[in-house]
Length: 435
Picture (tube, rainbow, N blue to C red):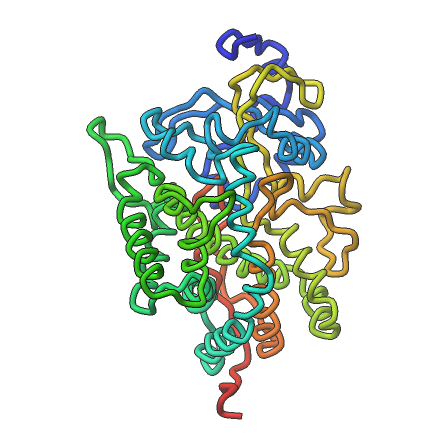
């Protein structure tokens, strides 16, 4: 039936009907795991009202999908749940902006998605990424050196915000003097719901302007085109040169496609690690027994990283749109309905993970969805893991008595599980280059 004629009687009769997983302010207080648990048990495909909050207008509402199996089904079924129809953010974009937003690979469905993904896969290879390993190691060492003698720091502000930005800039070939732009762009796009990061741009109607709109991204795209032109004239061993010159199916990326790739790499390639790093440290601080276990058994670092990602997935949710009338977990879904999968809930699903509320650095298997699933599974997962592994090796064993020095401050966002502040203290140690 058309979504505007949906019969919500059964939904509103559900005792879980008033549970809220939409308000971004909820996530600033902590991921609502108890709410997720109730939804998984009582209403796993839950109708969520989409009310006005933070100056952003209300929307039509959406289906919140919280069980692991259902999340995976949605992510693996682009023929039923589209990334293209309404893009992949919970809030509907301005209809005038939608054609522009649909150019991004993240917002495409097969087969168009596959062509662009092949271009990225051709240039963003594990071998290319591994060539940057030594640089990533040096950067991690230098950043830890910068705080090692102090005995305390605010981990995101002093260390982990800068680390993925610099690594990504090296990979893309962004000059040193331009790298502060990445943080500004990321905060604008990812932090738009948070008063510490939101820019005050408003339209003629007084409403906030979508940070993914053409107007708000014009400076980023102008920079991307200038950098691509420079790399075509003077090629270098970096990802931007590869993207600017790569051909798949007989043609190069168009200017709009190149712009959107740059957007995706700069924003997603940065903020996944930026959020994941302090989230993983926070998980260890909250579980000192597992922290000690990891320090005693460094061979557990790789499974520990997977458990950190399960415990604190950087991406909380992603949106799809129903292509046609369908049924999910027994719930009728109308064509055109928004369907939002909650990675943070799927990763704690009792049906997929034994004892899911136990943080276990040796957990095997660990089928978390922190990097997504299906055709849109994260292309940068290899680079993200390299950065996580390298940083933790340097940070955790250099500062083994790490402990909290104050409460964390979380991002106001229902999309990214960002950590704005994480005060920590430790016994001061000498810089590595003084040893």
